[in-house]
Length: 274
Image 1 (tube, rainbow, N blue to C red):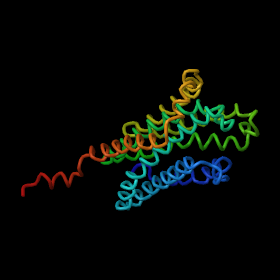
Image 2: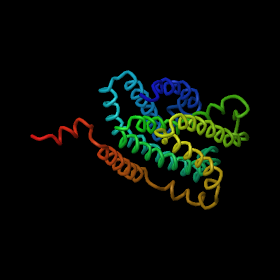
Image 3: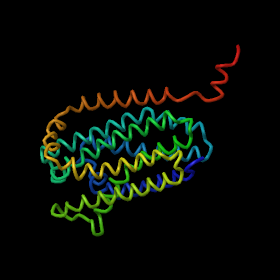
Image 4: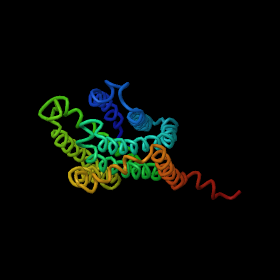
């Protein structure tokens, strides 16, 4: 099977996630909004589920692998909606100046998060609809966690070293740290793609998307027109975002699941004379 030890790399992210998100989230759970809890919990569950799928197929535990896949059909829409809600939080924070980070970077990060949502939706569609093509399916599933890497790396860089942020006067380092994190993530995605060019193209999609995010952060996100749109984005109700997100992701999940061809043995049985 392809990417036999991918689950070890995924599990290696767990302590890194703890280190990265301790100052802003894990160390202050009682002080953050339910939206951050929803996103944090669903993202963590997605990491665990991806690791379980990788481990189970490597150990030939196909029933467990298929069960995890079916669980993902329900988890993915919730995970995806939580990402949309983060966009609204960033936009609303930029408008209200609820904290200096949102005031400085809220508008610049919203196109980055929107791009993530669009590409992750596409990659999950590929993973499910191409689940009979094992190498493409595996690459698409493993490409999704690549979008977790820049938020993790940039927060680690803020803790110590030349990109450490000690106060608001050093917030400019966040942009440098994010771009460095994007470069590392792109390099990793391209390395995975170049090892199996024919079937690993989802990694190329991820690399291209992260490159686009870098450009959006420095261009569209800083434009006056985009900043002017933030009040409208921030004013979208939570219910509308949840309804829209569940509808879109639900349709994509259904289309992906139903578009995969039957297993060969099932197709043969269906065509056999009675």
